Length: 347
Image (cartoon, rainbow, N blue to C red):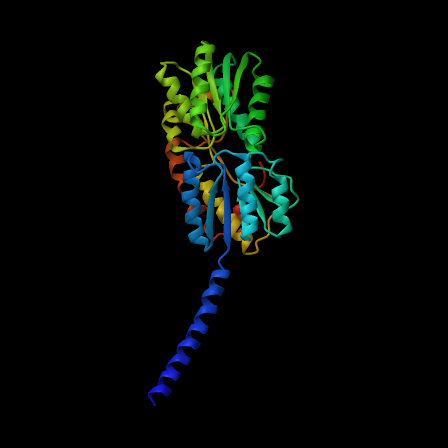
């Protein structure tokens, strides 16, 4: 009798284990895995982007795996290929060089894995591109700086790296506006920082020594602009800045007017948005190849009035308002919103 009872109990346990195991496995299989290839995970912008991206992952019910590339193109390509081999459901990548990663994107295509180029445009006939209105935005940034300097003087520009779509587009816009609209302004230096604030600091220190009449500095990203501003302040120089990205560290300088204008993408907004888009695509949402994120110009009321008096008028929010908008991403892009809310018409 005891033996019979033991056999019955054992059979029940085996049946129960068999019932539970497939259900658990099925649940795991239903959780999309998103592999994210970042330029690096130390830069303040990427740290914040990851934080909000992980919040989006919880909200949307996906698993995220983050890999930094430490600014190395070779490592970035290797990270993409590793995710392809792992068979993740979607790959997000912030391309250091959009042409150089095209072959890796094709490997993802061969495995039917969607690829999203974050803040960049890769021509791979497979990938999506999550973009910003970079050319028009950076044109406004350059125009604000040019007007602040009354169309005269020497300026310099800090960029990310050649071959990166965002950096290239913002650099082109800055150059075009200065050459076409402000012939009295001379662009004396353009430095590729590779998203490294120490390279930004070194470049600015050199410019201060080489160009004693330097009047303005444009920055393609706030994360490298904060370091540049610190060098200028330490040298006791008065130089006007104009920047992009909307990092909170820059808002005090926007408020006091030393940074003429900023553009709010916002690291938190960018991180949440990209994971939200990836999760929706993994679950079957259909989008055009290019998606566009709404952005905001940030300046003080006083600076806006000064620029308006010089003939430049544009919609803007104040730094105080930008602080709120930058952290309202969950409300703006939550799973309750329709798929169409994740993109706006190109500006």
